[in-house]
Length: 268
Image 1 (tube, rainbow, N blue to C red):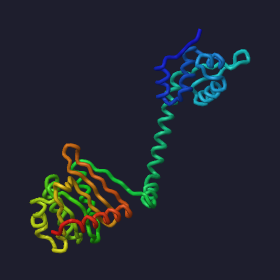
Image 2 (image 1 turned 120 degrees about the vertical axis):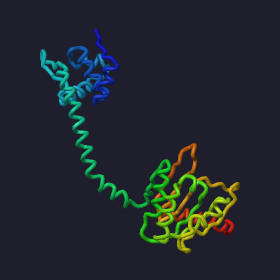
Image 3 (image 1 turned 180 degrees about the vertical axis):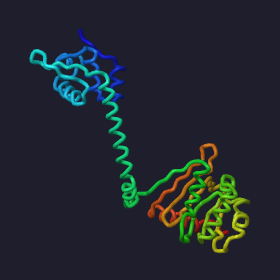
Image 4 (image 1 turned 90 degrees about the horizontal axis):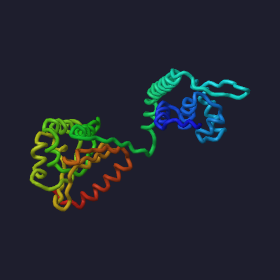
């Protein structure tokens, strides 16, 4: 009579850490109450050499025992607690590996950050994420020129006034200058007079405007800090999403695209 273990038993044993073949052999021996390799091969439809390899592996793991019967090896399943011990050993090993990886993460991150030609990309979501991107614009110690494309209506709608006021003050203190191409409109035209009324003249953005109906901008693209580009949208339905790309070559390419648009845009 051929004994076939249930598929659910084999799947459960696989989830416990056994390979598919090891789970099948273990379950077959359990179902038979013990068996010779030839019977296991017949029941599992695995060739005999494969069965022997699996049996050796299960023996090393302490999950089966071999007994000599009539000069032949007979295999039996060890007591069920051995399977629990095996699972615990795997968990302990995984914990040790996790702790080991934690210790080398700082070194790997340092090497990763120095890897040439590898852009660093960070993703952000919701209003707080967009504000994190804006904070990165002013997370510098030396002045630089910020350039980009923006929809000021969206900025004023989604960014709290107190946050934006602090953002402008920080730009003023650092000395960050700005050139921007904006979607034209009443709010855009009065943006500087409303937002930069108490800053140094050199920090007040130099703006040019493009027709909103022909070139709608529903977000912001900013090239900043010499090697970064930030992108974010103002899509309420799809969710606010932003990206920071840190790469000198991509930054410079985007700046050249901006300069081309700057020449084509109407002067303020």
